[in-house]
Length: 371
Ligand code: MG
Image 1: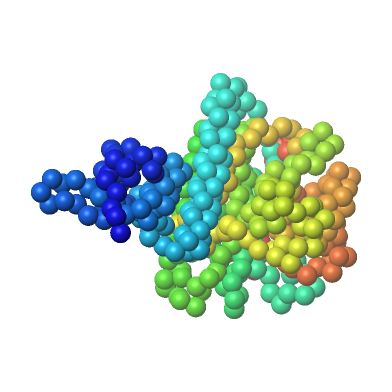
Image 2 (image 1 turned 60 degrees about the vertical axis):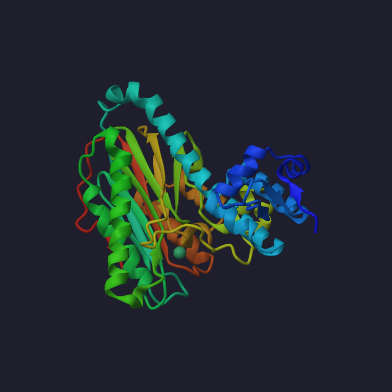
């Protein structure tokens, strides 16, 4: 086979000779032959395709080690590698986007934070949890206190889910104390990392717990500032000015398919993998919660619930209860009834919390529900 000079190869591939020299140095594309006397480099015509592929992958921003791996594989395997790489890029971009949105919100709200903190809001809350009609145990756990509300829905065989949700709730419980407004999200983020580490330690100590995990949706108040940490498919809703808003995004396969416009809301409701979680706390270091900083107002009502409520009960029925039942405890009880009426295939946990400027309610003796 006749070899091409580096100049001819550069012209044919559309790459500069400098780029070809760089690819050689980086181990991405070695010449077929280097003349020992002149150091001139020669390429085979068959290397043109690989040279173009390397150039495209570099334009994509792929790290060198990945380019080496992809360009050395047969086309079908290279395609699979590339798809996996791009899925990682999109996941990282989405996490960075969330952090950027939070920082923008945080910095924009900084000027008003001092003034807003003068207002003291009181939380009136009620917690209800039920095993439902099908499951044998309750793997949900919840906590409600004057500054902190949270719901966790555990998963894993042989009751490991119960261990996971209870452990994460325990790990975050110390947050129910005064946390300065500017520290809300840091405090939540650190507490979630501590919780993740607690899960990791438990699995190391007892390998039978391997594969356990839990969702977590937590609200933490400081004055009128509210921090929200969320991972998984439990949900938080806000009722304000007569409207109900879902303020968390499910980390499920169907939600991502919906976001990408690949399925409709109707198809999502009956999708065979509608319960498949893309993110949960599993003790693997990798799963980061969504974090939001919000302004709370007197009159706001919040609902935190596990999927045992929002998957089973119709959204309009949930909204009706939230909008028409003034007492938080009665509202939580009515929400549980909605899920029961729908067959309650899963554990159901609800926290209904009303924000008022009234004096604090008498603390309940056992605010934590953990099964
Ligand atoms: Mg559940």
